[in-house]
Length: 384
Image (tube, rainbow, N blue to C red; front, side, top):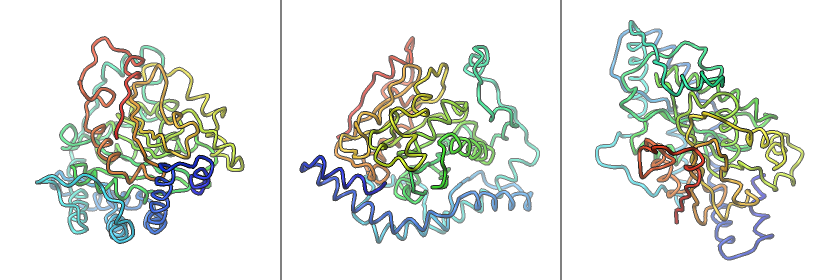
């Protein structure tokens, strides 16, 4: 599957396509070296943190981190030597939190103590918002299976820090693809970063979306945030959208950012019909048809990055969302190949802007009086 972009260069030869293909080869070479660092799941570190919190009932400082310090430090080390040409455009602002292995380990230890202190004697009930009440009145499930679970206790970071960010990789990949994006987000103030690996043997986007839903509930319970943000690359964005739009995940996901995701399906999927997941990315698949159905009162904001030189998206515009019921913004990034989305500095800056905005679909204004989802959806942006 990852070799298809380079075959496409032979089909659509041009100077720009040749440059992108060379860049894609460099990204692929670096990622192959990073791949072993992302094989393990992050749930193991989270389970260890919960076990430590249960063993240490004493309270502590309200500082949290949901990253795996061992895997992150190893990935950063490999990234520094293997992908020197792939660098983040942004630099850490003065006063930002240090993110070295020692600092990360210290934050993780502090998180364990703070988690126990927050859960020892404090109980909060999440108030029902007007949007929740409206969704309930319309007969649409307000939050899917997640709302039937007990609401997590509010931790001191709720309302004062960025919501947790969950990263979801693409087809036959793992969380190591996000090593540079994670570094960029950490340097700019995002403390709660986590990634989910789903098996390459997964045969159904719906099953992967159910797994994602369970993991989102776990992240909310551990961090005390009712809603989180999600970044999905390629197939990961499609899985995340299915969870949000079809499984009631809009109650948990505040903003969904997709990178080169085949929202309308891709004709290239017809070349590899053997794998069930690839078949579900066809333009006429049942999953794509389900996502085209009405989605009234969806509370998630969608930000879609797409490129005119994305070799995996045929046509390239299929990476955009065009749905009347969804609040979304399509951002065109020029000259970026499919594999380069998670490591591109311009894209990383756009992701930070979207996640930091109160209204990612309209970054120039915080409110949209009288506006509808369809009106917002017409907004287009372009990044050189």
